[in-house]
Image (cartoon, rainbow, N blue to C red; front, side, top):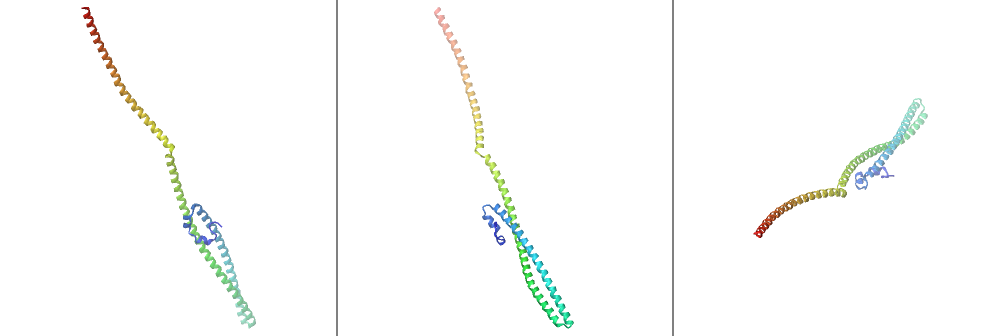
Amino acid sequence: MGIFSRFRDIIHSNINAMLDKAEEPEKLIRLMIQEMEETLVELKADCARTMAQAARIAREHDMLAAAAGRWGEKAELAVDKGREDMAREALLEKRDLETRASVVAGELAAVEGLIEACREDIATLEEKLASAKERQRTLLARHMRATGRKRMREDVSRADSSEALQRFEAFEARIDRLEAEAELAGTAASRRRPAEDQSLDARFDRLAADEDVERELAQIKSRRAQ
């Protein structure tokens, strides 16, 4: 039977309340719309059959009423001709037809009442169906927005993933290492230059010392020669 067992269940249902409580509102509303559309088709078919029945009953009523009228005319004719016996028979036929026509008129009124109720039910169901389709469009729009947000967040999540962070951290560590190497290279150069200068001064000192030694040696040799 689907979501609803009968048409009245649809008419008296609160669509929004059902969707708010549903775990899968999109799936539920698709089933609801399908059920409503199928019920609407059946309801219109029933209404069409009822209207056809009303048309047949109306024709039958018209035929009985016309026949009763003709027997009334015959009764008047018999009276005019002085045939009261035939007039009585004609009036009996007329009364029988009028009785049958009255019964048929009651049936016609009942069927017309069903048609009116059927039309009201169709209008109510069409209103419910329009409301459900509008809710479906709203849910579809929300679903599209939610899907877009989810996809965007997944992109952001991938950008923030551990692998990406590791690559970034490795690149940052490489830059740090290059900066450290550059700084160490500058320090070594600054230290190396004073060392070279100190070695040059030492050589000059040694050279001066050698001259002193030579001078003192010459003095010693001169004294020894004297």
